[in-house]
Image 1: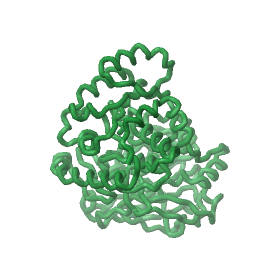
Image 2: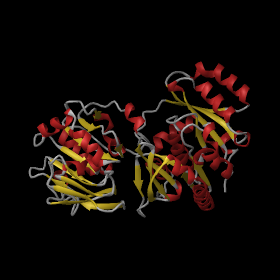
Image 3: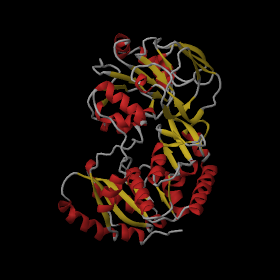
Image 4: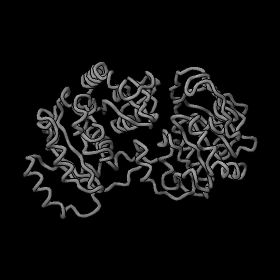
Length: 462
């Protein structure tokens, strides 16, 4: 198990690296995260929705993502309300009090999912959530304390030295753990070191002496190209503004744009875009974000560049580009909201049910950028409520484009992870873009700096 001193300490990346390292050593390995809170999700081949981090960890292990790997997914909607996804299926929207009432039944679901994976795979690499020592949550902490007590794994605690206070964080986390969980901790990992490890040796010796737990690795700061888990990671994007992505308040699945990270920047709603391509991403609440977008300066700027530069909408962004959104009581009561009117499309929300499916589609439209790969197949996945009718589809029966092709939208998440789409985009911009397999690069760096033999000596291999 990889636990952390805080959110964004490096748990997901270290879990991913361990999955690849162990898989290459010949083990049958699977990732597991009991409960994840993330707006970045993925759809499995069976149409089940899980957090994208667990999907990437599964790919690192060389296996297909499975809903058992992330049995509980919470997708925040604001005002202490989250959409609850259980074993890949949306159950409904719940506030924090209602969710906590479900903890007893969710514990059983978590246990059964883990047990099923543990029976099928030799090693299950468990990722914790947030900080492992949230003492106010111990009675309902599914992703840390509960799964640790149930699975009894060998635990690594990882801390982020780049944020400062790593020794205090590791020591405090360890000491605050319940005794029966603390005894499972076999090592610490210091993550994101920018300087020389030599300067840490004195601190490491003192930490090991105080806790009687070894520091099993010091990992350098890695410029990861793996999907970010939550919107906090947006602050880490510092690419050039060749591509501008509108930073919606309720943005979701912004991991769609990770392959563009070096040439993309998130735009504030008050900005005047200077980009060559503008993208409106997905949203957890399309109508609410649309209303706000229309009241902000960037909306006028979007309309000014219409027909002059490519404007692309993905999922919720696609819905916003249409003429009208009609809610029959699914999200906001019975209302009709005018869209941006840049596409001849209309979206209707008639039922709460969400569509989750993986698809392979042929490029049939003549939209800018996509016309370079017309007739080719692209892969993606859909996660959305609402049905959109369109007069000019671009992926067989899906999506929509303007008459001149300069504006287009689609429900396909993961579109920019396709090599042919990236190639066409790169040709349009005059830059080279490619999807690179970073799993082996990551695994090599981590394996070099982690005392894996000592860690594996503590691991129960089924």
